[in-house]
Length: 188
Image (tube, rainbow, N blue to C red):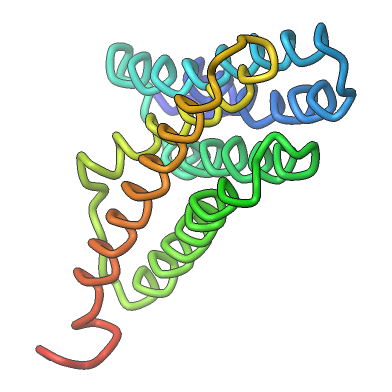
C-alpha cells in the first residue's frame, strides 16, 4: 500500500525540525535570557528529532524518497541558520568563525558535489563518520547556544566547536577524495 509520504510520522518529524529553526532563530535574536533558554530547549528537541525520525523510519518501515531527501536538508538548515544567527548575535567570537565557516563551506559544497555526481549516476554513500559529524555539529551548536545561560561553558564551547569544524572538514575531504576520479577523469 502506497501512503502519502506527508502522512508518515518520520517525515512529519523531519518537517517539524525544518519549521523549528524559525522560532529558534527568532528567540535567539530576541536577546533575552528567557528567550535564549526557550530557544535552547526547542533546539535540543529539534536536534534529538534527527535521531527519532530515523529510528521510527527503521522501526516502522516508513521509508520514503521524501524522507531520504528532507532529512539531510533539515540537518543542514538547522546547522546553517543557527550558525548565521549565532554569528549575528556575537555568540561566536572571531576565532569561532573559523570552524563555523568551515562547517558552512562543507555543508554547502558536499551537497553540490553529490548533486553533480548524481547527474553522472555516481553515488557517494554516507560514511559513519559523516553521520557522527552531524551529531557533533548539533552538540557543538547546542553548547554555544547554552553558553550565555550556563556560566563557565566558554572553553568547552570553543573546544567542541573546533572539534566539529575539524571533523566536518575531514569528512568533506573524504568525499572530495572519493569523488576525485569522477571529477578529474582519472581512472575512467
